[in-house]
Image 1 (spheres, rainbow, N blue to C red):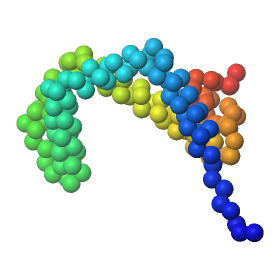
Image 2: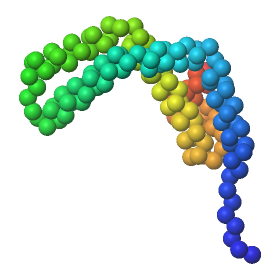
Image 3: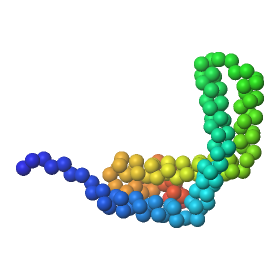
Image 4: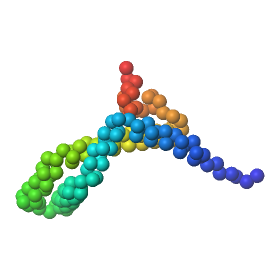
Length: 140
């Protein structure tokens, strides 16, 4: 008999992944986060300003890494761009929503990584920190 390679069945994984997506997407808080992200994505000027801010910040960071002098005018220009961007509610809402979405993604990733590490669904005791990442603190 030849060695057969067993492959995980994609159907149940897809089904549960869709259920996870539904659990996230159907929450009112997620809809609010998504609306903030969408408002930003629909504002071409803000997206342009954000790109300019990121480009300018990356340039200053690169100059600093190479030990090059950053002129006061360059720093002032960056600060002016940053302050202008951050003075707009759609921009700050977007940044906050983006941070929260990334946090959720990181928590899901930690949970999945732990499952692959230990070979089963993780419990609170499997985590090295008080919370399991989803607000369940079993450290009574």
